Image 1 (cartoon, rainbow, N blue to C red):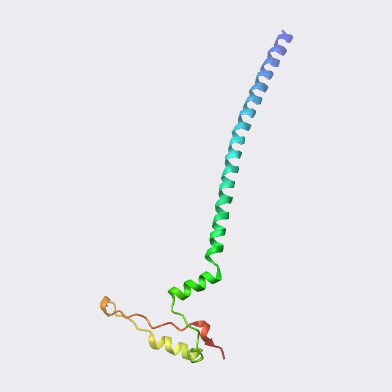
Image 2 (cartoon, rainbow, N blue to C red):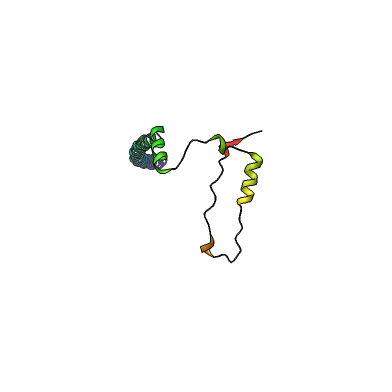
Length: 124
């Protein structure tokens, strides 16, 4: 009787080990497929990053930005007569500030005066 129970226990242990090996093998295959898919996605993302970096390098070329600024912006060199002191800038800012009534009409809205650039300030 004891020999029979040992034999049944051995068969059960062998069957559970076979199932465990089969399960682990199946799980490894799934994880390998996932790893391959992730590596493909990483390669695709790296290629996209490379393309975006090349595009960014083109877009931020100083000569290109200078050409676009000249084409689309009406900028000139700052003249000495345009440089103001801090107090003068504040006085201009408050003098040009206009408040609209709460029931304002859109037809009375005027364009804002040209801003005074902070880079044009002379510090005392």
